[in-house]
Amino acid sequence: GTSKQIKIKRWEQKGEPTKCSKCSGTGEMRFVQRSFLGQVVNVQPCRSCSGLGYMGGREQKTTQLKIDIPKGVSEGNYMTLNGEGDHSIKGGSNGDLIIYFKEKEHNLFIRSDNDIYIDCWIDFPDAVIGSEVKVPTLSGNVKMKIPAGIENGQLLRLKDKGIAELNRHKIGDQYVRINIQTPRKINNKIKSILEELKLNLGKEPSFKKFNN
Image: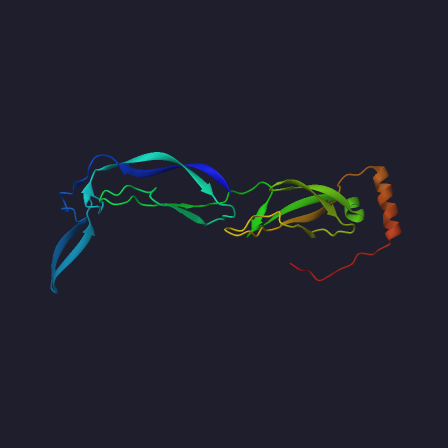
């Protein structure tokens, strides 16, 4: 969770409202039309007072509010601040302010429910013999072991490193997708080592059914 300052525009009290002279405070205009079926009454909102029944008594202002955002909120969630909406010119309590949350895209993580995902690129030797890397998380860097023989595209899980579930104590996980990068340019020494490795492995290419 966090706290944020937000700017809103709302109607605030200014002076006393007066009853609309056009609709006499009803907020409606009635028009009688005659047809072969008889009289038809057409009711429309009063254009002079926008259907409020009163004129004046408030003005639109921009104000700042501090809101406390609970941990675990996601796109489409909302919170209601009672009494922080528009001033009612008819008397009574002010309206409520309803705040909808929209997620900003992160430069590293992708969110899925309460889990988050990140890509990690490693060299071929690290994939073969294993290694240890520092992985960025929402709470800072942590060490993660990469097992020997890991395959390209394999997911490793960091337990409880995701996002807290809204109004609950459960926390999601972070998944790290391993990508084995192939160097495009190598020197003669590395080429010689790889050729020797290829001879020692002695494996032919294998094929499997395409799975998308």
